[in-house]
Image (cartoon, rainbow, N blue to C red; front, side, top):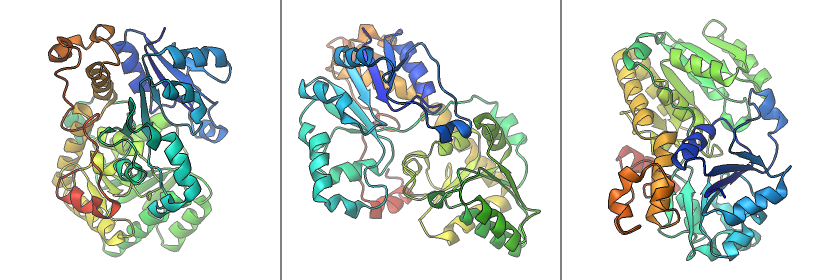
Length: 410
């Protein structure tokens, strides 16, 4: 029997490091239950079908999948809207830890839908007093779930945890190409590929040297190419199309500045983790889920308010004009990922949380030495970390989030 089972739509490359860490921590008593095949579009973008010893395909082995969910000590559930996978377990009162991006990616006013509220009650609110906890993959998740009165005092900070690369930081920064800016995403409406081009136009008009690479493609690629030509940016802006994830990471290692211009529909935004791990000074929209958790403005990155292109331009301009500042920001960004926001720390803290709550026995994990105060009386001495993964996820309204970021209160 696997003691810890993670259930999600499919195992993607952003989840693999966390799953590998959990398998090691739980001495192999871990399974990832994939509920559907990887989408064709993502395969075309360079994603690959995963093959790991802990991976079980529910859609080809449904009976095995049902038994794993039923018999596990803990189930971590998210990434799929099909609640049927865990209904029996929830009704039996067995421990379930959910992870979720925000409920209302388009607008919180959509919470007023009577049909939606009824469904949220059935899926979430009715379990508010049960052994069900929520890992919040984004800083706006607590506010959304607070609207439906779900998981009071049971929400923890979480995210996605791409591969953490370990670098010689001095060498990494020394090999950065001067005044380089990188953007990498699908060219679709809510990723806003027009924003880097408008920013680039302003930089050129102000006589500020730079070089921008925009990796990716999609429905807006013809418009992006048209704008590049209209703005006269052929020499300053490269459009190489889609690249494999490994090639994108190489580009991040070369770039000094990384732009993330998505709007609120970007539930987390794993490229923020990857760019920070690569020593980039990230400039990102504050409505992206990862940004308030990962970025401390003017310390390890910059954030701008949605629609404030002046803030985006000002941040990038200051980094281009002060390379020492840019590299200082990049070093701090690297430290944020290397020291706290990574898969190994997240897995260890989640295992400790499960032991602290009595869902797992300390002897089931390899983190016993770090849990000595908790395991003498199983759950008595466990305390949540004060920052990073598995720390308390505070309920902060959308309107106040940017101000709270500037004040360092996230």
